[in-house]
Image 1 (tube, protein in one colour):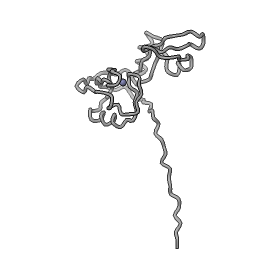
Image 2 (image 1 turned 90 degrees about the vertical axis):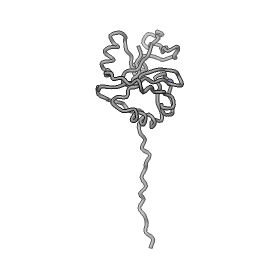
Image 3 (image 1 turned 90 degrees about the horizontal axis):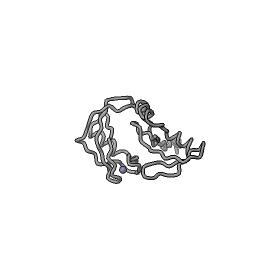
Image 4 (image 1 turned 45 degrees about the horizontal axis):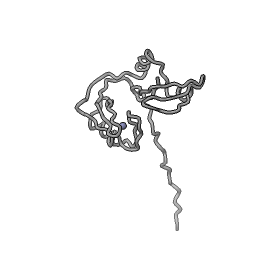
Length: 155
Ligand SMILES: [Zn+2]
């Protein structure tokens, strides 16, 4: 007698979202200096309360990243970044809200969403974003920076 097996195939094609939105709370945090071998950008890497080992492990598992030097790579940051572990420093990293409040004292801050909504970006040149303001057609030059949690803002 032949027994018929029930189909037990399950799909395993669930994809992970490529970008997680971090909703991290304010904590005492530590930063290290790092330099990118590709673009030469020196920047601070927020390692939180994690050890060097943990950070290396996390970074080695990443299969893509955006460098603070504005390029995107499909590879682990460890292949690009030279991290100066002797430079570990404790510092209080401001939350996004604090950072925004501070920036707004000096500049009119535009989020990436607002930029797309209100401007037509025509290009980037020497570190500034060139855009046309939709409502009056005026050409504007915007500098850009990242908030503590890594969101891009223009000003
Ligand atoms: Zn880089």
